[in-house]
Length: 395
Image (cartoon, rainbow, N blue to C red; front, side, top):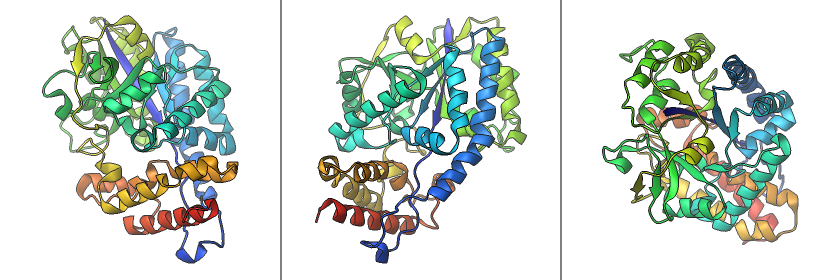
């Protein structure tokens, strides 16, 4: 049996408002609540609510045979609580089916696993508590921010008691091997890895509405035929993507909702032994088949699939270092408001916006950025960091 593993990533950052240099020491309202509320409510209507309803119907119509998983960043969950509580309710309905697994991640969608192991652990514990409070679940599977993975990340995740780590099936990692089996991370005691099948995932997430793609338009029947032609010895097929694919990145007019509504029944009616499973179910059912060595960190971002989306230029590295230089002071200050502000600055989006890449990757970075340019974003973030540092007594 080959399992189709859908994992959907839900994330919204607390975007920083315009903060010129002369605001330092004068005002401390760093985050653009108006913009953040507007985006949360808009994407709730475009994506989260209708797509959750689509998946709930699929679960009910298949008597729970359709299964999927989510990772929802803590920053997104907090925004839903503030401005779109109906989204929390809709995820609770999915949780109640027993057919949905909620993965764990850092509460702030941060790069803490790379920069500050203590902060990584604290943010993971914070996220665990949030998932327990909102959905009554204790996560056993983990995904790091943007699937950033290396031996150190896997070792930290293993130490925190998780059973499996989701990661990107990058070509430079696999060297021609399949992404559709369980690997064990060398250097982390063979900790289980479930890799993303990026060609099939990106067929849905990126190419679905591209009229220049040779497979356009993509129908559920065609996608199931592709699944049926895969070798029978595959343990699973990891279809991992941003949840905002549905309704925001790929508008409803593209037929993306109809595609997802039709797919579960067609997969389950296939003559091939295909089913749906969650990461927890796969790792408990299957055995690790091969070891995997990471020569460097791998992510699912940009063509390079490395860390360059966040740390690829001097501005990004400078901002990243400046943010984490405040870590000890923020954690020891005794002021929950200052700690909260600092932790929200660790969200990876704030350095992602500073990318100066060109071509298609640059277009994606600019699509998500609320700033006019990477330089504007850099000045804004650094001004906020300077003000926060002064309040924390860091010189």
